[in-house]
Amino acid sequence: ELDPQALHDLAPRLVVIPGSRKGDLPGLAPHLCAASAEGLDLLEEARRLNDLAVGRESDPFAFVPGDFRFRSRAALKIQDGCDNRCSYCRVCLARGKAVSLDPSEIINRARIIVVSGIPEIVLTGVNLSQYSSGGLRFPGLLQLLCKETDSVAFRISSYEPDKIDEAFLAAFANPRVRPHLHLPVQSGSDTILGAMGRSYRRNHVIAAVAGARAAKGDPFIGVDIISGFPGETDDDFSATIDLLKQIDPAWIHAFVFSPRPGTKAFSMKPRIPERVAVARSQTLAVLAEAGKQRFAARRIGTVLEAVAEGPVPANDNFPASKMLTAVSADFLRLAVRGVPPGAGTSFRCLVTGPSFDSINDLISDYSCDTL
Ligand code: SF4
Image (cartoon, rainbow, N blue to C red):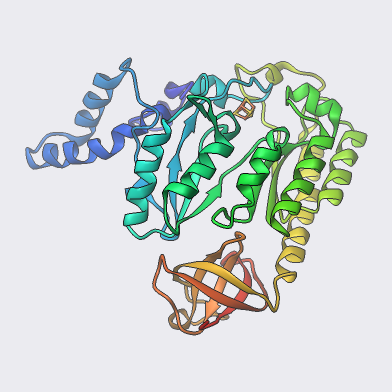
């Protein structure tokens, strides 16, 4: 988005369409089909269409995701851009100020997804906690969606820890909202959070997780952590580990800090040696795996709601004809034995035991329950 030329330079036959114009993609395909039928050069034609679009105002919500869905869920973009300026972030520079889709249009799009039979909608945006339209904030929108649609479940893609307030938790507690919360925590050190320009501190994270558990029992809680941010000392990293032990997330997405041109953090000092940042990231990966296993183990012997995805690729453990993958309401990837429901079907299954299969990323082995 910010440096298309760098991508261009990677290969001579690339046409770079920025994320802000991905709404053009569905229209591009029929144009290229027609161009192919006329014997035109497809690369030249794609470039010509792309050049025509440069500078044109784009609608960040033009991309209607119904045709580009996962088998088990559809993504519905309701928000774009961000008014924060975290010191490491290029997304806010690329996407600009926060904008929100009108609630009536969101309801229309959600109803179209419901009619297509998809059982789950993932609400997405650059920063969902900045959703705002005519005085309606994200918690109110979520309540409205539950009221104005039937049966479909909603999953929240990510939410800022300090915005998890009573209104959010009341909406999150709705049984139609999946027990899954992703928090972009980034660090457990208040010093580093300050340097990152984050708007919360570790006590907000602890309160957010406690609130989510009070609202939903034992939801899947995932967190993002950046290791090796400029100035991160051993004590800062220990504070992150300490926070993770306190909140016990079901998953940690660990990233090594990467300086992005144009951001404040690009020139921040002292830089952390790569081997130190990578070693910290590896420590986080070990914690992530242990947290995932603890979370999955707490499900053994329980009945879960899940949505079927498709057959498991054949391997020594799982004959393809008898297994399929599914995603549980609480975001576990499942290997399902028994009567296989069709892809995109909701069903209930009994957790029979863990099956940590790193090849297929299957973290639990469930057998179908016919209830
Ligand atoms: S809140 Fe997220 S999108 Fe916004 S500036 Fe910070 S990191 Fe970037």
